[in-house]
Image (cartoon, rainbow, N blue to C red; front, side, top):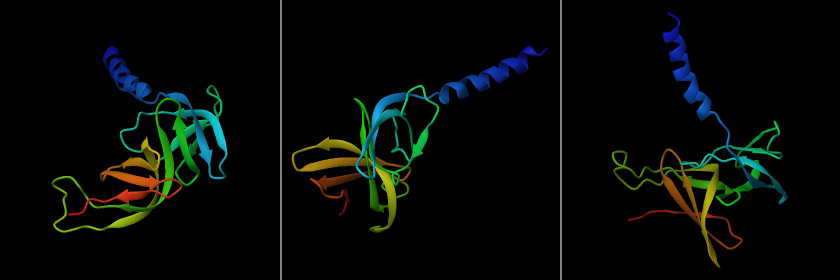
Length: 153
């Protein structure tokens, strides 16, 4: 008699418990003053660039800091990915059908975001940022601020 509601509750609660699990990996944050703090980052194998990063100094500790791109210069997950903070102009034009604009769209906003480092060479570094609107690529010369690469016809 009570078995059906109980099974239904289990079927709903079990996936929620799995989804809510944390996945802390060794990593670091780079503070705005240049200091590096080693600790653990809740790594989510992000499909889109993270907006907030969960960081704690001790893996078993309960003190979790949620950090955004304004709070730190960047962060890295050991053996996986490196992100840097960027504050500046970000294009807002759509690049996928059926949302393509009729004309050339130069809409921009100033935002603080995390850029994923894709490649570093002797003189240049390539970054990527992905959100609900589109994937953007940024390039930076050594010791210079990144600039977004824009598609123009």
